Amino acid sequence: ERLPALLAALPKAELHIHIEGSLEPEMIFALARRNGVALPYASVQELHRAYAFTDLQSFLDIYYAGASVLLHEQDFYDMTRAYLARAAMDNVVHAEIFFDPQTHTARGVALETVVDGLHRACADARAEQGISASLILCFLRHLSEDDAFATLEQAMPFLDRIIGVGLDSSELGHPPEKFARVFARCRQLGLHVVAHAGEEGPPAYIWGALDVLKAERIDHGVQAVRDPALMRRLANERIPLTVCPLSNQKLCVFPDLSRHSLKQLLDAGLVATVNSDDPAYFGGYINDNFSQTFAALPALTAQDAWQLASNSFEASFAAESDKRAWQ
Ligand code: HPA
Ligand code: ZN
Picture 1: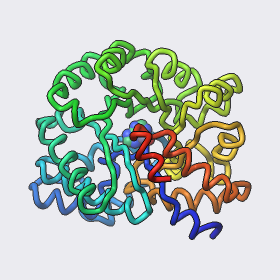
Picture 2: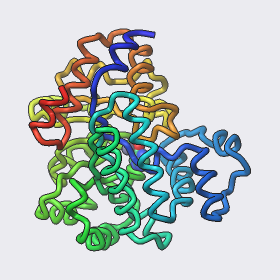
Picture 3: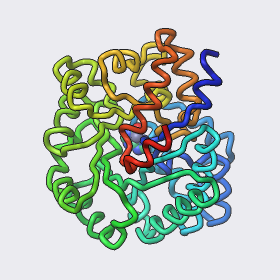
Picture 4: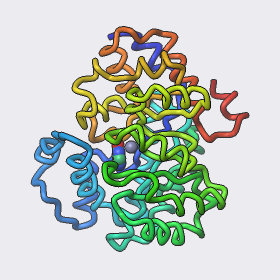
């Protein structure tokens, strides 16, 4: 294994983690039992065997099924504490955590229950482990913009506990333009804005996320390598990409990790970062993403490793004083 000690020890920020994607199969079964929720899988092993994905949608179907065990504030708390404890072991000092409110409110769980559990976990992890964490509310792009507006309305009492909004779920057929008005409103409210774009979708979706949504970061963005003008823009404007190599491998975005575009992104001067996306589903947390990607791409150097960690702080929404302290 190449550079393992250096990679593991680097302090880093994680900027692309869906908290529902940190639910390990064992915790899914434990919460199902605790809450009396029936699962369409007989055992942890059977659930694990279903984690054979062919594309983004084949993953999302199982990911939403897994999230159905989350009902009470304590469930959201336990999930988030488990993630932050695991992230701290990988020397993550700051995490910006995505959550999908519509996945829960559609099942009758109040948004307050979700935000209370996530926020209490972030506060306790900061106090007990010294890890910094903040929350980014994601709109589900397979649902309507009206549904996103209704979610924003429900979130109004909790905006002091959310640093920004994002856009996730099924990308193809749901371009950024569909959410132009709700993102404009979020920007007016002073929220940071990010968006998944160019995971499976074309470079045009990245242009749309930048020009129409005014996204400050692009989540994934790996399809940008297909568009030289877009690559120049991302580099010139220092728009960060939150890249998730193991996710891209498991969802067949690249045929193999050895064909991943991370090195091209770095060599073109883009502010690329490495993240875990949905670590319980894709076979690894952030340090696994670093070590497996460096093992698969011999062109990546120790300098690249340092650059990726440095980029993670530059790309974060943390205070400049915190960023300086962490680096
Ligand atoms: N892409 C889109 N939506 C998601 C993802 C992803 O990688 N993970 C969780 N929701
Ligand atoms: Zn994602």
